Image 1 (cartoon, chains in turn purple, blue):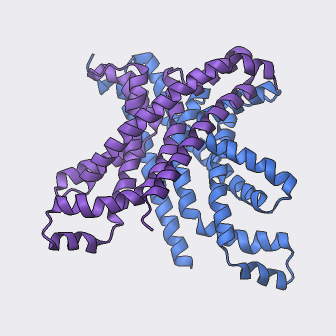
Image 2 (cartoon, rainbow over the protein chains, first blue to last red):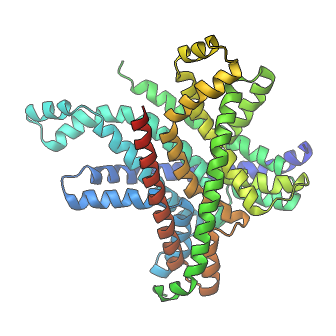
Image 3 (tube, rainbow over the protein chains, first blue to last red):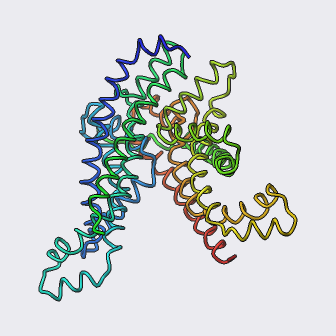
Length: 215
Length: 218
């Protein structure tokens, strides 16, 4: 282990970890938006929306995220979508993880007892009110942990944008492996930084989950 | 520039060959991850402390870092210590090890969930601990986790696209090859996505059949 080298290059990795963190946060936000819309579509009364929701989930979960990213970044200009690598990374990964989150959110909503909605309706609530005031508050508690699993996968998934040259942790590690021929050292620094991000996120999710418990 | 799919047929044989390599790498890595997963689970639960602790650290490291980073480590790291593997082999090892760790987590839980009476009964019948594990406990545990392991294998198929980055000429890299000749990224990534989608559907169908058979065998 060449610790002198590690000390010399680690500032670059800290900077790269910052980019990874930004990617993770933005992707999570976009994923949650897409996931909520997807779940709403899949649970809609209108068959058109149900079909669109199912098609969204099926395509994005049925093909590799890397291909989706390449399609957006390299193929986008052909259909008039010009994005820089960072934007393409956030949008590509966000829409991808949104498909997984769709299923997580839908699963939590479906898991709430039917009687709850019926009770809400009986009390004179509209369909939307029953969803808003009865179902969602309960379902939201159920979603936290599985959404945490999605977010954990998403953080590791941000490494894919290295393939479109976004200077984040994995890209930086790859570059330094190329220039120093010290793969183990570079893996160690970037690995530790990834694990700090993932560990902190995991703790945050666990805290949220505890706070949201009723009993 | 607009879209023009008429260039696609000329390169279909290249893409098709790439798809075969994707299937080959998925199957090889799936087998490695299955056998490795069982082995890792047994080590994590039953090996002496001196082995278990460093092993836990290895597991932790593999679960907390991206697959792409691990592929770089394996591909370039092995070269550095004098083992020059073809990219295909490095890709299979990287994918296989990565998913073995995830499978191991599932199998560990399942082993612990097998009724203690099974081990006790096997020991009473005169089997050694190792024999009881190998012939009684582990087979039951593995049967219980075939469905979630199957889901991991479907994830493995999609993650196999990553080995294109270390130069394995599978589906993604074949599409890139065609793109390099034609400058038609949109068309060829759509075609590659379709191929993945079909392989994915086929894997899901196989998995559902296997699940039904396990259900029936109980």
